[in-house]
Image 1 (cartoon, rainbow, N blue to C red):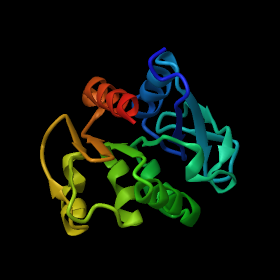
Image 2 (image 1 turned 90 degrees about the horizontal axis):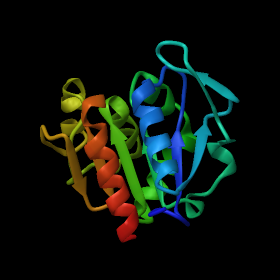
Image 3 (image 1 turned 180 degrees about the vertical axis):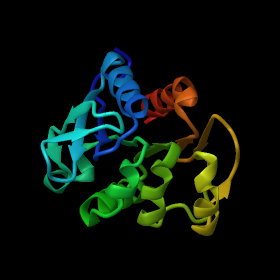
Length: 173
């Protein structure tokens, strides 16, 4: 159990991408982390294809101090997540405290809204490259990019490298 004692938040909102939520959720649990699903106020959220995910707590009810990392899955959910001031502030504070902020695919929209990408190297699904560059990031096309506490990936095909990098970063913290 390489991540015993580590606490990881996974954010959820309607229209999340199934693999980008469930793969890290299950992989980090398998590695021994305590994984807590944080939503924006509802109890149950549905994926792009209707698969349900249950939030353990609303993001407003937690503090970044309680977590070692936050994972933001993609899909269309990030467009809804970024509308929650509490969720955006949670991500901003996680970054300010140097905690791991990991995002994949379209989830880069949340760190953009949190204002934490200026001068940082990241990747994402190619269609939000302009958004990330306009937010001040240096965008590269790689399966995973780690810039300090930020970890980013492009698509579900990158999930193995994404999760390996998150686990390595958690082990080093």
